[in-house]
Image 1: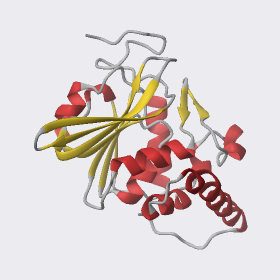
Image 2 (image 1 turned 120 degrees about the horizontal axis):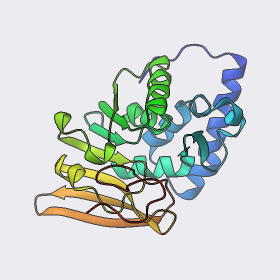
Image 3 (image 1 turned 90 degrees about the vertical axis):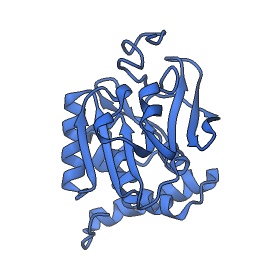
Image 4 (image 1 turned 120 degrees about the vertical axis):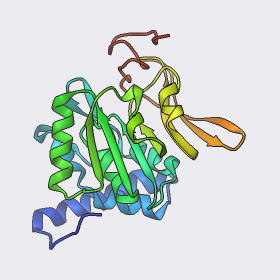
Length: 233
């Protein structure tokens, strides 16, 4: 967790907006994990969105971040973080850095976070934002997230911030014993379900959760392109 210095008046106002966001959007929907709530109160979401929508950063919805991508609704970020069941010893792979906001939330709770983004412009923007805020336990990588990061595997937790046609086999292969993969599964523009896959002594166990709506996971083991409907074989 980065060190926190004294706040300016403007920063104090943003902190109050974050606290209100957590109270009104997260806790009222049944999320009470103290560590996750603390992370959401801490990470300055307004610094992870384009300036033209910064005044909407703490609203109850997703926001565009450019290049056809979005920053997820705060509740969904909170829920995915809860489902990941992070500890301070967790080695985490995030697939889809986007703006870097979910990355920062993960970094508040985990020991080490690798985040991979396929779009160079977003990857660099996220890297700079995370660096400015002092998240030194994050490594940003440019590449095809559907293939994971085998050179750094295994991971205790993998969090995918885009919808896959099915849990990508390379990501499953990179899960450590006892590991958890959190991934939206479904079609582009259609039904999607937030899914958790756990690696247990008996093998892989999959649990489907709530309906959701994410941009597609584009890559070799995802969708061909943002408009595609069929996964690669």
